[in-house]
Image (cartoon, rainbow, N blue to C red; front, side, top):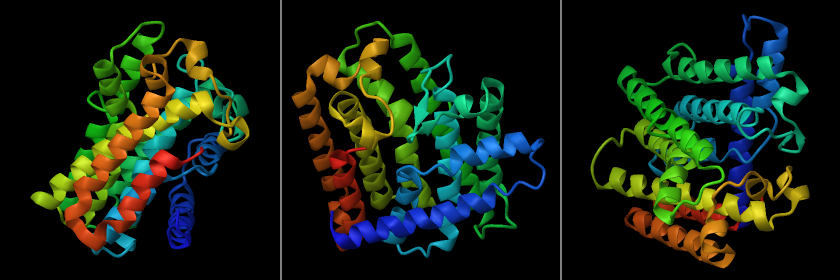
Length: 298
């Protein structure tokens, strides 16, 4: 990664931390413990890839950052909610997330469930709140539809259901790809489309290029996650490796092998770069993000 790219990513991450902190001020959280659990989960660091994609896409299309804050925060709140619930004993039963105890370990299972529920609701409240973020009503409605679609049965929740039903089974590559595109890829693609929606790009060749780009880097991201679970460094990842194999989960390395998985991730990166080639210099930041997705170590 270039120094300018790293600097831009750091600026985006610092910005979304401030926006999330503001969204999570919560004058009426129900109980202080619920607010603490929500803030603990959402403000615990991380790659912030999804809000970064919102900012990078919007800026690449000529948008200032202020109108991008709402969709960037909303998609990250959805992502955090999904992590809180995925970590629960009924799902992946993880003890660590981002190098810290998972929400249900730091608090308790019931609080973690409620924190996830509240984070999901807050995401849509942020997108619909015209008093905090200046976006046209029609744009807000489009964003809400995009995020709901990526979160529900045709996206993240449906993918997680397939994932749970696949434990101990052997999937073919097509079925595995379907699961990954839903569980992880849908929200990553949605991040790109939210940035496009904020910029008023709702149809035409540019939108089609961004849809293809988002779909390919979404799948590449999950394949790289599968690879890191086999070959990553736990001290860098902030969680233990080998969890997928221990649970009997089908992954790209388990089905096609580690080297073939790496080649597939690179192929998807190349496809993503081809998709945004018509954007010319405007797409360079997105191109750097695609390369980051398949070269990251955490």
